[in-house]
Length: 331
Image 1 (cartoon, rainbow, N blue to C red):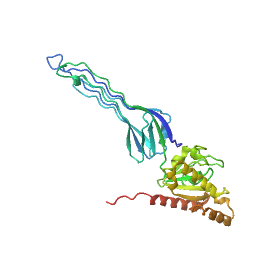
Image 2: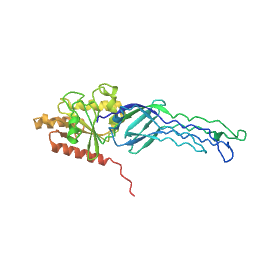
Image 3: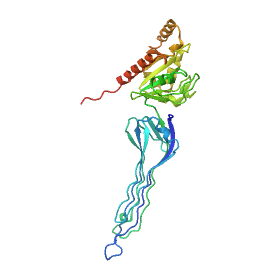
Image 4: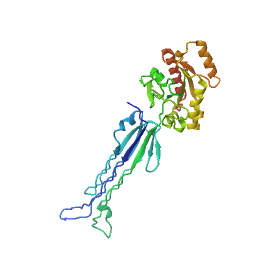
């Protein structure tokens, strides 16, 4: 299933049920006092976070979500039942913007539940209008409408490991080699038009589409994918040995990350040179690695055609993710 990271929907919480006019009918008396119950409250709409990054794609063909209407009041002072709340399951990392009010809420943990829209209050039955001066009220009120809004939902991936780099850096190929993602690969820029995801041992790996100079200002794929970098736990900066200027390729991507969000300047990364199979001369490879080390320490070199290298890199990255997990408090 394709990964969808943005979606607009219409949502409306349920209307409140109506109040009613009813009367008591005691034995031997046709009309007793007022006994019309109030209407039930309409169902509210909640978002709750689940671990399913592909979930948003399931909503693409359903653009409207409506909470259940509250039940009308009944006789003998019975209040109507409240409408059922609507639970909107969304991926962890979702940011929901109420386009009507501008309010934003985010889902950062599995199981988190957030109120999006309140159901309408139920109307009043005639019993509630009874007073010392109005013993037989015939007044009643309709239920109030539930809140409604256009909701814009965007997902910022919370991946454990994210591959970044220029187009054709080998991100999708490495993702495929480490997982069973089956991401599309090719020898031309922007083969990846949306983040590809893979899973290994319960860890989520993401291939974040290629960055180019000017991406922070919207050039190429621009802001659409830079946002996913912020929540990735471990960044792996891939640089293809096809580049003549390895340092320049590195600086280009780092500059775009920092221009998009200055906080990313402090975000650590592993730098990995890819496609070592294209370099026949081992001496030349060492020379190029040493030149890049003047700019940044190089974590590793890899070719996807060497299973041992791929496994070693994968295991090292997983250990790094584990080392960054917050310690559980002792009992």
